[in-house]
Image (cartoon, rainbow, N blue to C red):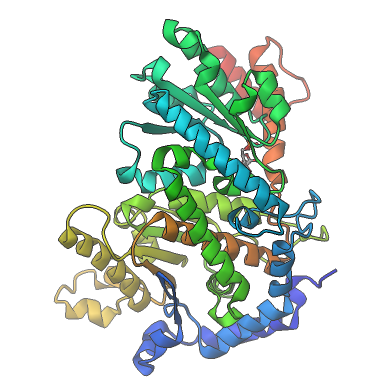
Length: 525
Ligand code: F6P
């Protein structure tokens, strides 16, 4: 059993070191050292990773790398790739990266996955030949967030004549809005649910089935309108899916990693198999980097260590994801689940209460919209947050000059956060009225990731970069990043409360607030 993080000598050394670091500012460091950027940036294939705007010195980096060594990050990484049962609470290996290792002749998973890819391709071809114009992907949480991110990112290059929709919420507003205006006999539903028991997904599938049954043409062969993707084939068959239209998910691949599995069928349908293979290949390249690069050069390791440094030692209150590219607008939601469902846990592997912060509070929004949303808080709020700015050098579509405006905004924000503005500087601008309101504390941390261009390959790399970052942070915290028991309690209570909502009597064991809310509902329903 490992000692808790807070008791490790390398962690304690960081605490003492942080006291020294707090006395310095980014402004001062950049003024003193013209080589700061080259010292604290790394280039990896199509990526530039700039972490020079973190409140770190060379000594900080050395100390963080010592922490990584003491926590045996490399050993855990190798255990994951070797297929050991590192998901302790579920007694399972963690195999999402293995799904991308399609050429590993020794892996039975690679063999199965290659067969699955062939089935996906054949099914996609068949579906396209059947004349569907709309595909509705039904899936909750991890069973849709990655797929939605990828499909939306490249919608400009999608299969002509095919529209893709995603429905996750049990609130029927979402599915009703999607179904409105669709032609039933031209609409296909993908039911993606690893457990095939998620109420949101199953109730939406039921609504879809009823909608099809109301259409004379569609009802004749309604089963042709569904494809299921699940690790629970029996449940999918019992629901009424046809066996040849059910693709497998593996129980060793968590829901939030499902985009690499057969649940990536939406990507294959919408963007084509070559694009899906490129996505896998990009992620594979990041796996290779993560496995082979020395810790000080290793992007996921660096990103993870910097996150821990900011949250544990410099008291940042949140981590903000800011893609400056509309094609990445669903990245914040995807990363929110990845980081917070994986590492939002208050006990370590041994079941002991954590005495250090766990997952960062992650939120984000696409730039420049975020600037007009919550940047006031980032610049002048009393509590600091760390940010990841993500930009793409080459524009997707449209005007270069507008794209340059976008990127100049991104780079300006990182500069403004870092330098801030002193009272003298505010006054020097000529407007001395209320000058103290125009003071920006500065010294605020950010990473910048620049991709040369956004392709399925580079997006695969980016997604795998964050997956491994989250994995490394889980190792540092000594928690299991691969279960999500916290989601279960609310689900169970919802089942009981549904009975209470739908029956005349209220359960007498309920607390007063719950009873009052139910009573209010019943009175006004
Ligand atoms: O939100 C909890 C969760 O268990 C996620 O991990 C998962 O991606 C999602 O629900 C959907 O689960 P399923 O794929 O089993 O429907």
